[in-house]
Length: 224
Image 1 (cartoon, rainbow, N blue to C red):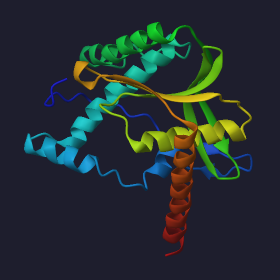
Image 2: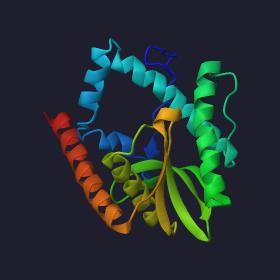
Image 3: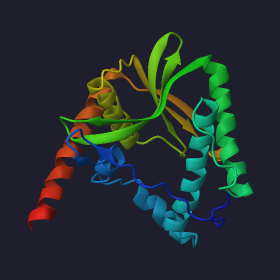
Image 4: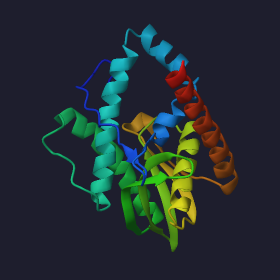
């Protein structure tokens, strides 16, 4: 996709996570929004120097990323993606990511799906999240988050660490955690990153700090 090419925006509605008592919890990505992402500043500036509106560009790439997720999830046994919802150009770009996923599967061997887009809440810590995929690979149960991006960033580890906590509190035994990055074009590459237990510990710590900050800011706004 050229930088100037922008498709229409199609965003998913924010998922609501509700406790047994009826309290609505924030989601993992919403909570991590309190953390500044310094890599976005030079990226947005670079696009601006090229005369490209970074907001519109993000909207366009987000559409392709969403479709790529849907294609992978359908292949793994999830719901079918809506063939009438996307433009042909969007489908072509998303299929680039799907082909990279097929390459990964060929290399990794047989995968067996246990759950796709599983929604969970963490009652004690008052947050929720939707896990991309839980399944069996090589005799182990893996938690996997799929990313359609040019690179992997620290917040991706914070995010999957939060999902790992959700699995733990909901009695889902996870034996390994990995992030699969499937780029949307040849220049964005492909990456399979196994997240170590040490990284998960640090990621959980950062996420839990962000969670405390989120609720502190929320309390301030309600009582100012």
